Amino acid sequence: MKMLKKVATGVGLSVLALTLMTSAALAQSNVEVQQTAQAKHTVVDSAGKVFTYVNKSDADRHIQAIITKQKDEVKPLEGNYHATFWEHAGYSGGAFDVRNGYQWHFVGSWNDKISSIKASYLGNGLQVFEHSDFNGASLYLAAGSTAHNLSSYSLRTGVSWNDQISSIKVY
Image (tube, rainbow, N blue to C red; front, side):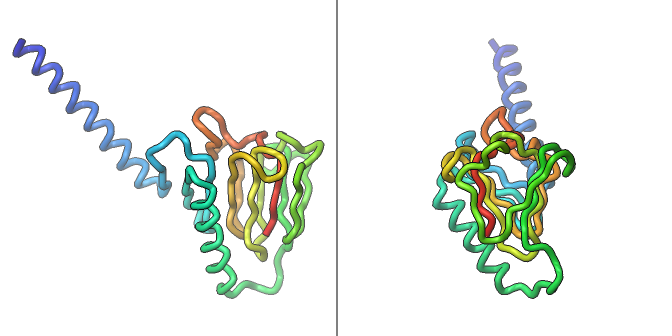
């Protein structure tokens, strides 16, 4: 019985140590992760820090805070006024631009084919949605942010944002 207690204690300590090491690694990676697999809305700020939210209203509040802050920042006069979306990771393959202030309720032939994105520097970011008409999970990229490979962004457990976009808003 004493041997069983020692083994159980050792396993418990190993699990605790692994949990602490994982938490430390995530903290060092500059990524904030909620303790839920149900996060549906992702916000990437201009520094590239990733935040996840279960409730769309919480993500929308964060997006509005980013937009408000960016409006107060001094920006160069030159720059692009559109976001660019690519068919493949690494900004390759076919591409299309969406000007600031425009939105697509449905991306048509580009549905579930987008793999990399660059948000315009002079806008207020962009938001992409899993389904048409701005429904489903969402991913927001602040102005000037990039997503070299949407496989790096989790849509839900086991599924990335790669080839998952159906509607777009460019702010």
